Image (cartoon, rainbow, N blue to C red):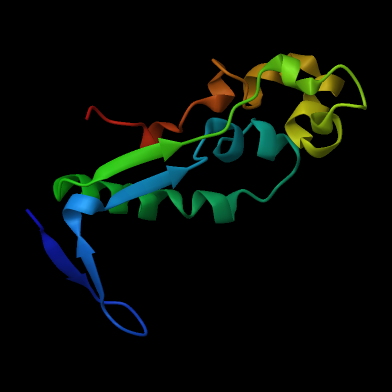
Length: 129
Protein backbone atom coordinates (compact mmCIF):
# COMPACT_ATOMS: atom_id res chain seq x y z
CA UNK A 1 0.00 0.00 0.00
CA UNK A 2 1.37 3.39 -0.99
CA UNK A 3 2.08 5.66 1.99
CA UNK A 4 2.89 9.14 0.72
CA UNK A 5 4.12 12.22 2.56
CA UNK A 6 4.99 15.63 1.16
CA UNK A 7 8.36 17.10 2.06
CA UNK A 8 8.65 20.87 1.85
CA UNK A 9 11.64 21.59 -0.37
CA UNK A 10 12.94 24.16 -2.84
CA UNK A 11 12.19 24.78 -5.63
CA UNK A 12 9.09 22.66 -5.03
CA UNK A 13 7.73 20.09 -2.54
CA UNK A 14 8.78 16.46 -2.95
CA UNK A 15 6.37 13.53 -2.74
CA UNK A 16 7.90 10.58 -0.87
CA UNK A 17 6.47 7.08 -0.81
CA UNK A 18 7.55 5.75 2.60
CA UNK A 19 7.26 2.15 1.36
CA UNK A 20 9.97 2.81 -1.25
CA UNK A 21 12.25 5.18 0.66
CA UNK A 22 15.22 4.63 2.92
CA UNK A 23 18.08 6.53 4.49
CA UNK A 24 21.70 5.77 3.60
CA UNK A 25 24.35 6.68 6.16
CA UNK A 26 27.75 6.54 4.51
CA UNK A 27 31.23 6.21 6.06
CA UNK A 28 30.37 7.32 9.60
CA UNK A 29 33.24 5.28 11.00
CA UNK A 30 35.58 5.73 13.94
CA UNK A 31 38.55 6.18 11.59
CA UNK A 32 36.97 9.32 10.12
CA UNK A 33 35.18 10.83 13.13
CA UNK A 34 36.98 9.88 16.33
CA UNK A 35 39.86 11.66 17.99
CA UNK A 36 43.08 9.66 17.76
CA UNK A 37 42.01 7.85 14.58
CA UNK A 38 42.92 8.22 10.88
CA UNK A 39 41.62 11.72 10.01
CA UNK A 40 42.75 13.12 13.35
CA UNK A 41 46.21 11.58 12.89
CA UNK A 42 46.45 13.24 9.47
CA UNK A 43 45.68 16.61 11.07
CA UNK A 44 42.24 17.22 9.55
CA UNK A 45 39.94 19.74 11.21
CA UNK A 46 37.25 17.30 12.30
CA UNK A 47 34.72 19.90 13.50
CA UNK A 48 32.85 20.07 10.13
CA UNK A 49 32.65 16.28 10.08
CA UNK A 50 31.45 16.05 13.66
CA UNK A 51 28.83 18.75 13.03
CA UNK A 52 26.92 16.35 10.76
CA UNK A 53 26.53 13.61 13.40
CA UNK A 54 23.57 15.13 15.31
CA UNK A 55 21.52 15.92 12.17
CA UNK A 56 22.11 12.39 10.85
CA UNK A 57 21.14 10.96 14.23
CA UNK A 58 17.93 13.05 14.24
CA UNK A 59 17.02 12.17 10.65
CA UNK A 60 17.62 8.45 11.15
CA UNK A 61 15.53 8.45 14.35
CA UNK A 62 12.62 10.12 12.54
CA UNK A 63 13.00 7.77 9.57
CA UNK A 64 12.87 4.69 11.82
CA UNK A 65 9.79 6.09 13.57
CA UNK A 66 8.07 6.28 10.15
CA UNK A 67 9.12 2.72 9.31
CA UNK A 68 11.84 3.60 6.80
CA UNK A 69 14.95 1.47 6.50
CA UNK A 70 18.18 3.06 7.72
CA UNK A 71 21.20 1.50 6.05
CA UNK A 72 24.85 2.05 7.02
CA UNK A 73 27.37 1.77 4.21
CA UNK A 74 31.07 1.83 4.99
CA UNK A 75 34.40 1.09 3.38
CA UNK A 76 37.05 -1.24 4.73
CA UNK A 77 40.41 -2.54 3.64
CA UNK A 78 42.24 -5.80 4.17
CA UNK A 79 45.92 -5.44 5.14
CA UNK A 80 46.78 -7.32 1.93
CA UNK A 81 45.14 -4.56 -0.12
CA UNK A 82 48.36 -2.59 0.31
CA UNK A 83 49.49 -4.58 -2.68
CA UNK A 84 52.70 -6.33 -3.53
CA UNK A 85 54.37 -3.11 -4.65
CA UNK A 86 54.13 0.02 -6.79
CA UNK A 87 52.48 -1.94 -9.64
CA UNK A 88 49.31 -2.26 -7.49
CA UNK A 89 46.66 0.39 -8.16
CA UNK A 90 46.09 0.74 -4.40
CA UNK A 91 49.75 1.47 -3.81
CA UNK A 92 49.31 4.97 -5.21
CA UNK A 93 45.66 5.91 -4.74
CA UNK A 94 44.72 4.73 -1.27
CA UNK A 95 45.96 7.04 1.50
CA UNK A 96 44.85 4.61 4.25
CA UNK A 97 47.07 1.89 2.83
CA UNK A 98 49.98 4.27 2.34
CA UNK A 99 49.82 5.20 6.03
CA UNK A 100 49.50 1.53 6.99
CA UNK A 101 52.64 0.63 5.01
CA UNK A 102 54.55 3.38 6.83
CA UNK A 103 53.09 2.66 10.29
CA UNK A 104 51.49 -0.79 10.56
CA UNK A 105 51.03 -0.25 14.30
CA UNK A 106 48.15 2.14 13.41
CA UNK A 107 46.06 -0.69 11.92
CA UNK A 108 43.27 -0.42 14.53
CA UNK A 109 42.93 3.35 13.95
CA UNK A 110 42.42 2.91 10.21
CA UNK A 111 39.53 1.25 8.36
CA UNK A 112 40.67 -2.35 8.28
CA UNK A 113 38.19 -5.21 8.49
CA UNK A 114 37.41 -6.18 12.10
CA UNK A 115 39.18 -3.12 13.53
CA UNK A 116 37.86 -0.42 15.85
CA UNK A 117 38.57 2.17 13.13
CA UNK A 118 36.22 0.45 10.67
CA UNK A 119 33.30 0.36 13.12
CA UNK A 120 30.38 2.77 12.84
CA UNK A 121 30.63 5.50 15.50
CA UNK A 122 28.74 4.91 18.74
CA UNK A 123 26.09 7.60 18.09
CA UNK A 124 25.05 6.09 14.74
CA UNK A 125 25.32 2.36 15.40
CA UNK A 126 22.97 0.19 13.31
CA UNK A 127 19.86 -0.93 15.14
CA UNK A 128 17.92 -4.17 15.02
CA UNK A 129 15.74 -4.43 11.91
